[in-house]
Length: 226
Image (cartoon, rainbow, N blue to C red; front, top):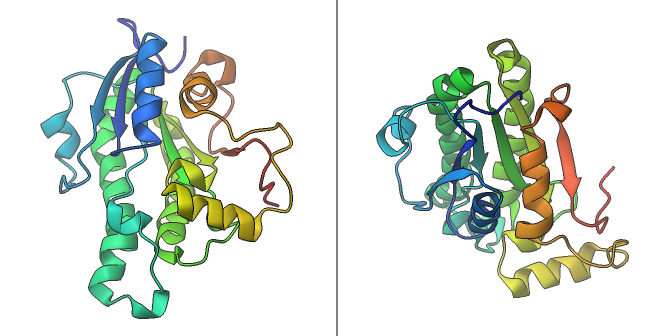
């Protein structure tokens, strides 16, 4: 089966809190051997994967690392250059270094890298310009990796989730009230463990081997970005 190691599927999940924690738990329940790096204070370099991950090929890397500085509401004009770097630039730089460090392991296994991103840039979110910047950068990074690493047997995707997967409940509710025109057509925002995790899992399978560079939105139809 494309995208899965012979000895069984191995996943590296990166990011503290949700959505990383729920997806890690969901993959574990589905039989994956999961290693979860849940410390957002790790200073990422090209060698971080080798320093923290078990040896051998990796079938799946899930990036959902958005430190507290990214998830904190702030007025753009009040942010210093240092604040902006911590909230927007550093998370994207870390995502690039994660991808570079994981490349040999993913190529060995014919693996998949999935970036979980909040639906910020399309929907808008007052006070969250840094998070929107990091999210959109990660989404475009997935497309670039799909184009350049396809020949190495690696697929890359961005899976866009409702902002509530990343933000404090009050902030997420305020954003929905300000921007959403209707309730989710499916009746609810998808559950991370039971509904989002199966999508992540499916993206690694041979059944979807023809799909790479996708920007998928899984939010129950709440935002429907064009």
